Length: 185
Image (cartoon, rainbow, N blue to C red):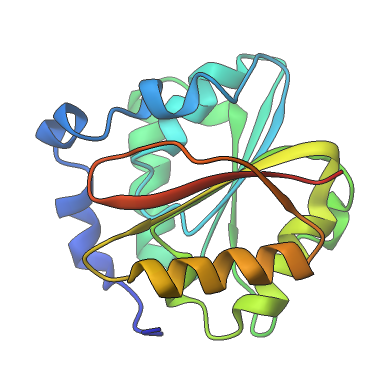
C-alpha cells in the first residue's frame, strides 16, 4: 500500500460541494454518531466530515480531529468557525511516532478512518492506537478509496484491525470505496 500523504493544497479539492452528491457526510455518519458522543477523526484534512461530526455530536459532544499537516488543520479551523461548530472540535497535530491520543484511552465512542489508512506508514500500530482509544462497544468506520486501495489490500487492513482487537460487524456501501464498520468488544 502507498504511504504517500495527500498534499495540503489538495485538501481544497476534497471539500468541494458537489462531493455531497456521491458521499454525503450526513448519510454516511448519522447511523453511527449521536449527540453527546466523543468522536475521533484522524486524517481529518480540512474537515469534509468533521463539520458534520460536530453537528451530530451536538453541544454536549466532542470531536477530536487529528492531522499531520498544520495547513489542513488551519483550513478546518476556519471552516469550523464559519459553521459555528468550532467549540465542539479539538484539533491536534500528529506526533512523530503516534497520534498523540493517549489521554483518550477508552473514551472514544466512534472513530472515523475515511480514505486515510493507506497513507499511514505503520498501519498495525496506528490501528492499535485507535482500538485502545475506543470504549467497549465503541465503533470505527474504515473506508478506503477503491482507486487507491485494492480489495485485497483492504482485506489486509481489516485483518490488522482484527489483530488490534476490533471485530467487523457491517459492510456499508459507499461510492468508489471499500468500507467496514468495526466494534471493540
